[in-house]
Amino acid sequence: MLADEAEFVIGVDTHARSHTLALLDKQQQTRADVEVSACRSGHRRPLRLARLRAPGRRVWALEGTGCYGAGLARFLVGRGERVLEVERPARRERGSRTRLKSDRLDAERAARLLLAGRAGARPRLGEATAALRSLLACREGAIRARTAALNQLRAALLSAPCQLREHLQDQPRAQLLASCARLRPAACSDRERAASALTLQLLARRVQALTREAETLERELTRRVQHAAPALLDQRGVGPISAAVLLCAWSQPGRLRNEAAFARLAGAAPIPASSGKRIRHRLDRGGDRKLNRALHTIALTRRRCDPTTIAYIQRRQREGKTEREAVRCLKRYIARNLYRLLEATATTT
Image 1: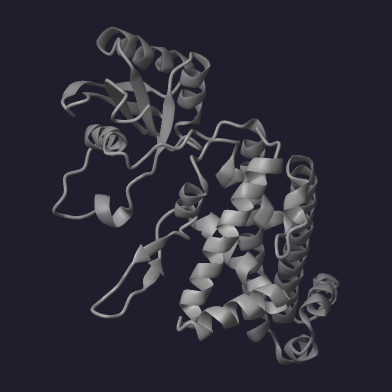
Image 2: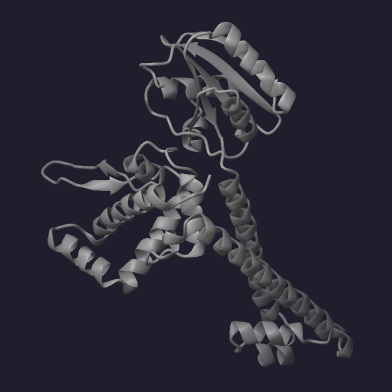
């Protein structure tokens, strides 16, 4: 139910505490706009408004169905409403000094995008993929905190007393962490050395704790991915983290209309960039950047150790494509194959 079928479109700009709705007819005329609370009681008000002011065929265009708009999307789908997801505008678009910005305008923009045929994915409502998203976010936070702690440890080591620094600085990372964690600040007679030893000890133990946390989360992600899409892990270059990202973006069968829409979401769709006699395409810089990063990781792994992929890149280069253009073609090929595999075998809902 898109622009040629819907009589009314309700655009929704979602936030943590409130949602702003704009009701547009097929001629893109605003019939009503309202702000409601982002809670269960607040979800009933827009539905009553839609039934009163848009009694015909209607469709909801929601931003952020995987985060701020998840509760409203579940509520509407549970009442038999047609809900589709709309991408949020890029910061460079909504932050321009020459453009106006308000929640009501954002809601109208969401509705007009749907009427123009530039949106139409089903919302990500599966509980299993929601669990994967939370585990991925937790692991990513642990990895970032571990990196920050490790950088702090190396910086603290540079300013440590000479005897302590010379003893530790040339050790490999695993050995360095173990040595720092075993330091005994109380046994140091020098106050400066005791402070440095305590700093290194605490930072090393923090890195080790965050490493164990990340490993626990990765094991849990592996278990859930094996249950939801075991065939995905059998693909060359697809690890548990990349597989979990793919499942979160795909979410459920039929959410995306075809593999081209999946490639567009992944930022792997070719965009014409021809000039004069040179005919070429470039990669899309939009879409889900986490999904794009997962595809890029898979492509790099296959380029390194998969003979078929190596031969594919070489063939594309013989055809006159640059290395970057050949990798672009490879990412589009991977997106198509993985989407078809997910549609055929995955059970995540």
